[in-house]
Length: 248
Ligand SMILES: C[S@@+](CC[C@H](N)C(=O)[O-])C[C@H]1O[C@@H](n2cnc3c(N)ncnc32)[C@H](O)[C@@H]1O
Image (tube, rainbow, N blue to C red; front, side):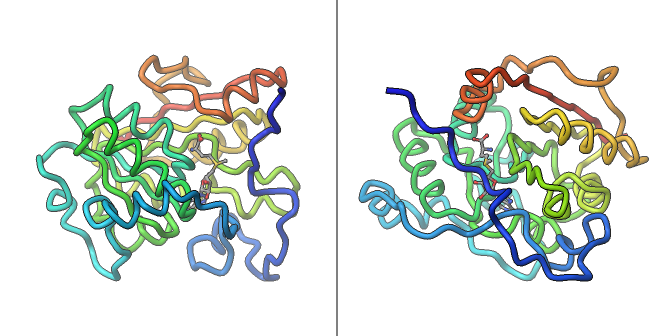
């Protein structure tokens, strides 16, 4: 039976306060968000996983810089993922590229529960989770020049023009990401929406601290698994647009 395309925040959400219009300003000061909080849909297994193992994986949002190494059993370069969804790519990359630690940020509880199930199932110790707005986490908890990488895979595209201000990839947010990357660190962005890809590319190109590793779009990185968004995009005849930038 054909499945429905997975839900993505975007066209139907409303309530953006007036005055939060400047490129990314509203996202940075918290007056608008790049996500819409949905309720419900937590399965019994997800609830159990959070109850039994949450304390091992989930760290609370705090108003101070984190000692990032202290979150993990082993000290390794740290990659932060913004909006891991159900964590499908997160655990697979953590398994495939075990030379890194991973800090996954997601606001939705079902995704947090699902990722914990997979981390337990595969015995992965190099992933930790913060359930909070990733922009606030970056701003408040992540010290400057502390990240080896940032993953932004299939962020909500916010296709309507009046919602573009909710998009993650905007000048101010890209500058914040760049500030948190260590020299040589990478920012890896993937979307199936060409118009968003070119918007993201303009924001990345305008950040002097970052350099495109390729001429234009990047080739698919073999270690990044396909998530359901990619399957649906391909089934719908849409392409994949990848951008890989390095901190100078
Ligand atoms: C379209 S889904 C993609 C999920 C996943 N990256 C994938 O490829 O399957 C985007 C996810 O980003 C999350 N998200 C959006 N903005 C966020 C933010 N500021 N902080 C944390 N999570 C965010 C949403 O909750 C949603 O789960």
